[in-house]
Length: 102
Image (cartoon, rainbow, N blue to C red; front, side, top):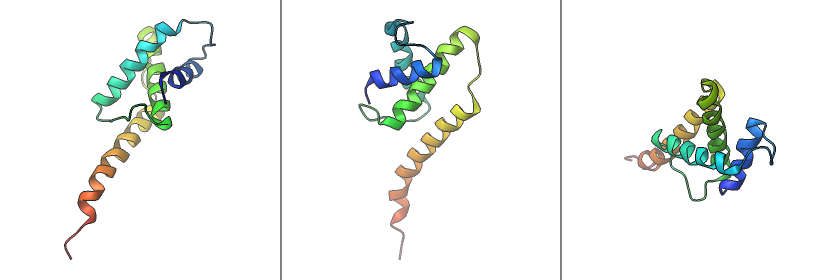
């Protein structure tokens, strides 16, 4: 999923029509959201998978709102980030624990 679908997700979350705001103002938020999530420990494929693109778009929309109104991150979004990070870390840990001593 490239940045255009992510941008669309972000716009839908913000309630912005395609023509009401210049994409150039929103696109940097996608990069910031990606970096924010990477700092949390999440790694992405290039391009991100659809589920990851949705998460990036929602975080970017939250960051856009936060810069103006200083709104806290919703519990749902915090949970999505936590679940995504946990699933990644568990997927990495599984091969190490799968081959036990017999």
